[in-house]
Image (tube, rainbow, N blue to C red; front, side):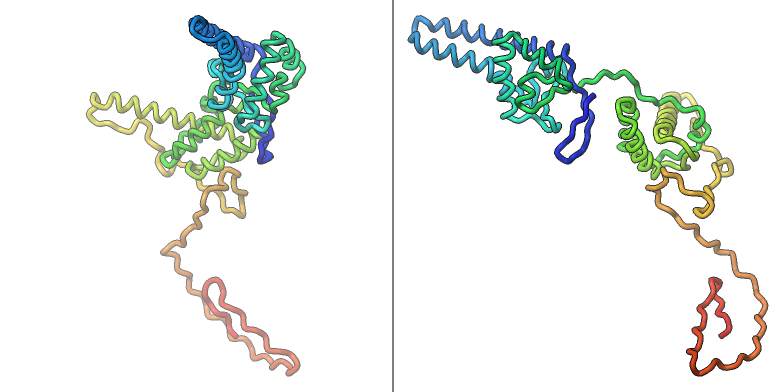
Length: 337
C-alpha cells in the first residue's frame, strides 16, 4: 500500500503493483507486439515483388515504430492506463496524484520502453523498479506515473458474524427503515476494514454508523465501537432476511402462517433513554432528529390556595424608578403587582 495525494490535497491509499505481476503483464504485451510485427512483416514481404525496395524499407520502419511505440501509447490512452497485459493482470497506470493517465504521459512511457525493454533487454527497468519505493521504472519516473493493482487479494471476508455481546440488543432492532444504500456502504467498509489505516477506520466507521443510526432504533449500548455496531446491524438484517425467505418457502404447507421471528411486545422493549440533562447523547445519535415529548392531555394543574395579600408598602423615593412587574410564571399565574 502507498499514499497518493490527489489534486484536492486528499490522501488516498492505493495498492502498488508488485514486480512479478508487472513482469507477467509485460510478457503478454511483448508477445502481442511480436505476433503483430511478424504478421505485418509477412504481409509486407508478400508485396516485395510489386513494390519499390525503398518503399518497403519505409513501410518496415513505420510498422516497427507503430508496433513498438504506438501499441502501448494508443492502448493506455484509450483505456485510461491499461494495455492488454495490464488488463489481463488487473493493473492500471495512473498519475502520481491518482488521476487517469494522459496522452503525454503514455508517450513518455512508450518512448522510454523502447530503450528499456527493446534496446537494453529490460535491465534499466528492473534496476529502477528495485530501487524505487513505489516500483517505478524509468518511464514512470519521466512521465510522473505509477502502476497500481485493481485486484487486491481478498484476504479477509466481510465480518458479518454477530458479536455475542450485542446479540440480545440486536434482536430488538427496528430495521424496516434502513436504506439499502447505507447497508451496502457499511458492508463495503467492513470488507475493507483491515486495509484501512487506524485513523480512516475510526473516522469512516463513525460517519457510517451515524448515518445508519438515523434509521435504526434503539440506539446501541454505550461504548460500542462503530465497526461492532455496523457488524451487529448487518448480521441481524441478514438473519431476518434468511428467516423470511425460509418462511416464504414453507408457507404453502402451513395453514396459519405466523411471523418467523416476532418482535418482542412493547413492555419488553429497551427502556427509553434518560433525559438529555441526565445522560449524554450517544455519538451514533447525532443524525437522529430529536422529538420533544408531548404534554399529557389530562394533566391539569391542581388548585392552588389564594396567595395572601401583602401588606401595603411605602412608595419608593422619587429618585428611584419604579420596579418592573415580573412576568407570568411557567404555570400561567401572574404574581401580584
